[in-house]
Length: 67
Image (cartoon, rainbow, N blue to C red; front, side, top):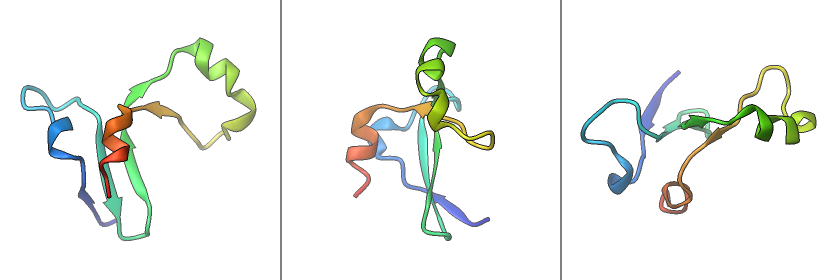
């Protein structure tokens, strides 16, 4: 899979490699790195998540500034 990072500069971490990030793929999709949600939130969304899916949380501004 080909992809390139499109994380807005103000969201790129300078001190570690475990920060939220967004990558644009050649398949016209995004890859998103974010925080795992707590079990209580996942339970609220259980009917929306397929067995092959995950939900992650990222700062709103990071997505708003992609384009």
